[in-house]
Length: 133
Image (cartoon, rainbow, N blue to C red; front, top):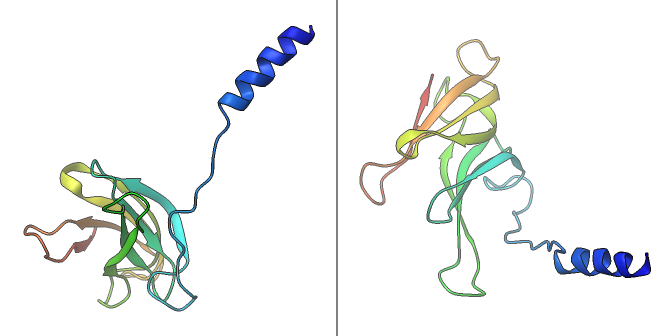
């Protein structure tokens, strides 16, 4: 019995999970504070998600270019700037051709939220485009 307990204990220790903070969001009130909802990772390791600050934003977190480097956060789209585009997004899911889809809790034509699509730029360095579905 003791031998079996030691084997189980050894297996549990060998498979211990680790937790690592890769990025810390800024103070409340900045575009990239208050992350909210699930994130999506693309094939290059870039993470995409939404924040709840101001009216909300869609952002990316790019992995470091060298070992031990820092992740880089970039606001790709800010909600509430264009009339009717929704406010307070709550995460995204991946769709075809790099598009992301999500919902907002407020805003839109009737002020009760939207379903949106955000598509990547057609040329490097271009803007992401948000469409209310």
